[in-house]
Amino acid sequence: MHIDSILAVSDFTALSAHALERAALLARQHQAPLRLVHFAEGPTTRLAHPLARLAQRARQLARRHEIEVHALEASASLDEVLAEAGASSLLVMGPLSRRSWRRFHLGTTLDQAVHGSRCPLLVVRRAALRPYAQVLVAVDLSPRSTSLIHFARQLSAPAGPKLFHAIDTIEDARLRSVNASPDVIWANRSASRQQARDRLTQLIDGLAVPLSAPQGHPLAFDVGQGDPARATALHQQATRAELVVVGQRRRSPLSRFLSGSVAQHLARCSNGDVLIAPLDSLGVLTPANASC
Image (cartoon, rainbow, N blue to C red; front, side, top):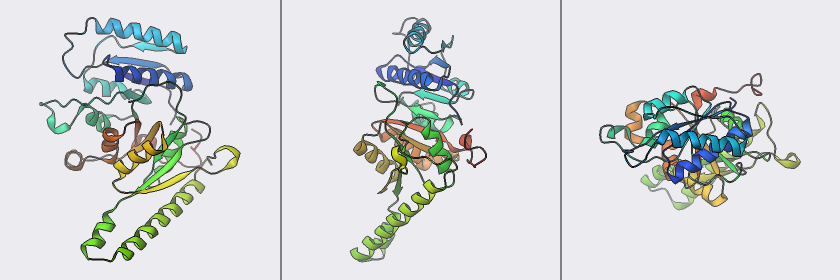
């Protein structure tokens, strides 16, 4: 899946300004047209002429980055934003966190965007000063991880993204519940980490299009332990990765309400940028379509 059309959301806050700058950098990197849409979580009575301001912002971005930028001529609701994103390869927005009482059960604006967007969603928190140099890919070791890695490659420096897998601690809790000794728990944990490392190596070796860092070294990876979202957020912070890419599986409304998802929790707790890619939109990569 190539990035050939980008939609960026603005509410004229500082964080949405970061989102627009990042969207413009990506549009230039991929030679893709950029569309801007105005969306506000709350009343806009204090904001005069938002559409005129958005059009001005589009002209500024077009001149500075030498890209094609268009501002939509009407403000949009969240549902309308997500509908517009259906015709795009990437939706870019800030971490909008307001929760509507009428739609309280659906979560914050960000929660609704994570689960409602049919195209990859980039949540921007940091100022966009340059293209992404360090990209981290959170993988679950499933076959769809291959497509996620290749998609992340489009956003990373020539060195390629780094992979990260977090081992859940449910097994540790089970062993403690039956009064297993610390040595048994430690041995089980070590075996789980080694198994994850072996599977990551197999995943990299089996990529349809091999990805290598400079001098032909294979992609770097690491294994963590704990809640996947929190462990990934901490690893992103520790490694100073500017972006973390995570896949999103389709879930039922009840499942989303009861437990959310790793992508949703990561978008909330990360202090850096997060890209959530619906795995259904990426498909399963095969040697025949790996270069598409």
